[in-house]
Image (cartoon, rainbow, N blue to C red):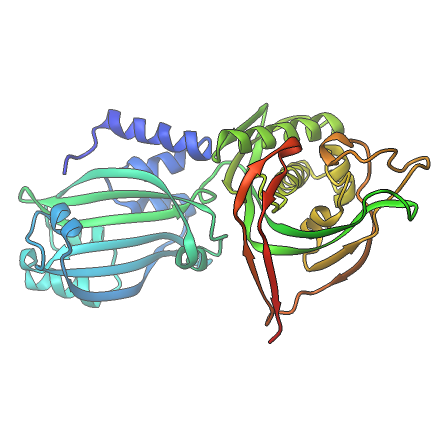
Length: 398
């Protein structure tokens, strides 16, 4: 396993910034340092750092661990998971996983490593072990359930991860991975928005015979959803997702900046979105999530229907807008038809800019013991991105 040179570390940082946006100087230092992370954290916070051990066990080395430590698969390895915390605030600063081959440890070192909540750097110092650090990787990972709980962040939050080895007597003594959120040690505030998708079950009136057109019934879905974060910038840039999703975010951001005359733009990272043109309302959720993030960044308090009007959503169905705002099972009343301020034709949302979302007539919390089975087989796509689908929707009571 080849260590990263200073040039390679800089390249890794550049790759990370292409994915999550600009890193702060402190974040770059934490990724690239070959010294004690504990000391850096104490200087940055001004508080002592404490260690909480979450996992401590002896395991057999798997092939990946064996390669990193240059030992044989199956050799005994001390597997240790710790949290480095601010001793004053209790905030988790770093989540660290270490793997150490037992046969390379002196008895006293092994005792401190396995029985005491002491940072590894200080164990090395206590036992006067001459060593060096070799950084082997730096990347972005997704928090997932465990890290989200550890750092109190969203499960789709981007995390910065770096891996390195501590070398003693020209042999790997310890292999370590350290992880912390992209929001930690940042120069500016990031706003994260998590928006649901939706199933639009039906339109109630498609010819305006009732004096209102469209109207609909639908239900919000926790997954798949749209997750993005944003921070202030002089212009608008979008990272993550595919090209089509980035384009939607960019269009919505431009509409909000121009519509509200914001003094700046935003650097936006798209972490997740529902599949487009699959009946899940991804376009509405992406646009509204972008608008909500910008409003929060620039302290603009606008109701969701106004945001929908600015980004050109809600011109047909109000289900997507209401799902973003409240969730649940939703009945919208449709638009006035043929009268001033209402719809004059049957165009969809994308071609109905300036039309406010229809009013919500009823909204109910969806029963937690009900389940939705949604099966889709795409046959073809057509005008306005419509998809012909085979959908079986089952509502099963408890």
